[in-house]
Length: 484
Ligand SMILES: Cc1cc2nc3c(=O)[nH]c(=O)nc-3n(C[C@H](O)[C@H](O)[C@H](O)COP(=O)(O)O)c2cc1C
Ligand SMILES: [Mn+2]
Image 1 (cartoon, helix red, strand yellow):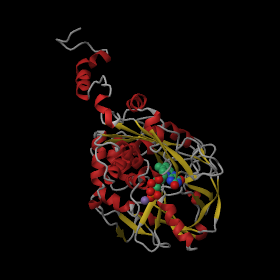
Image 2 (cartoon, rainbow, N blue to C red; image 1 turned 120 degrees about the vertical axis):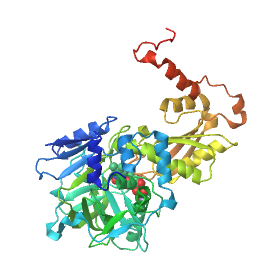
Image 3 (tube, rainbow, N blue to C red; image 1 turned 90 degrees about the vertical axis):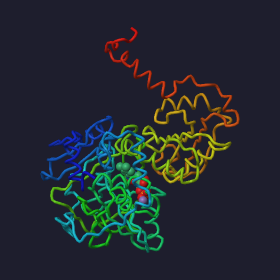
């Protein structure tokens, strides 16, 4: 690994020409606007905002961290010129459960350079932007990780859930149904107990990515990062709750949420491209302990409309890889590739290619792919295609749908599946369930050998043609000896 924390990651990204620094942008509008442009432009750099008016120099905010394959590879400790599939396969290898590492608890950390408790707590010490004009407040938690320990267990979960500032000492935490953080929270609440939580607002891009992915239920995101790093993930315990947070954290808020302490939360510009509804009652955390390094760096990951948006870009690789592992783990053979398209926010439109081995194989794949953990929450359309289709090419997937499916034979609908208050397509008065469209766009197994022959070209011929005739597309003269 080339970096040890967010600061050394920034140094690396800067030396690779992948990071720019901006002075003087306002938290009120400029940072939200600039971030929208960056996340909606493929290849855009990470940007570190400093000297934000109204804040001390050095109180910084970093956006667009993992939005290119180069930076994602840096984050995962892989060669930065790596191709898509190698990156996915390496990521799966690194996160195999037999590489899992217990976390390592350190005695102290730079995080405690500044400690605020009680009356001294003021979460406005950091330049939290107003990310979208219609947001119900300033969201300090976008590139954040919420740390909780399952009651009566060693399992420490870290998930990214949005956090809105109510006032200088109170923040609201919104967690969608089915998420680990909600399951844990509700276990405390059902016993009538408060749920201790820690909100980490600046951390290295690896633990952040882990907090936004389907690390299996019961597995700590810390163990998973240890597996990728090949050494125990270093944490430090907080004084009030005892919760372990990353030792390299930049800013941490500590406190409790209570079953009977709720306040309206939202609206917030969400990953669907719409404002998520104002939630009438979400838990409020009174910040009892606030800790931060000198010159703290907050991570900002404001949700935005698909397709190009930092978490879609890296999750197009990583969520797709996780689904591939889940399908194989479910015992389904012949899984060739998976693409959770950024166009669907890596949830709403997912394609799986298979080498068909038996009648019913395609349907089995579809139903599993709509239900595994990486796709269980708020899915919409799942497509299975044959392995001659390039699932990374939306046009190829659409061509398979248009030419190999016959709606009467090829479509299933799953009803009453897990959805979310953020789902714009279900009624405002009941945001629990949606349905899933499953499209079998494979050649029907029983007559696939008689199916019309695709024109091609096959991948080898395609590559050779582009090698030989590619000059025609470039304005370059024909190579010597070539027909022209
Ligand atoms: C920038 C960003 C913001 C997110 N905000 C929320 C949120 O407010 N609530 C939520 O339930 N999930 C949110 N998610 C998705 C979760 O982080 C994701 O589902 C993750 O798997 C949750 O961790 P868990 O599997 O440990 O529950 C967000 C993801 C990203 C990348
Ligand atoms: Mn988890």
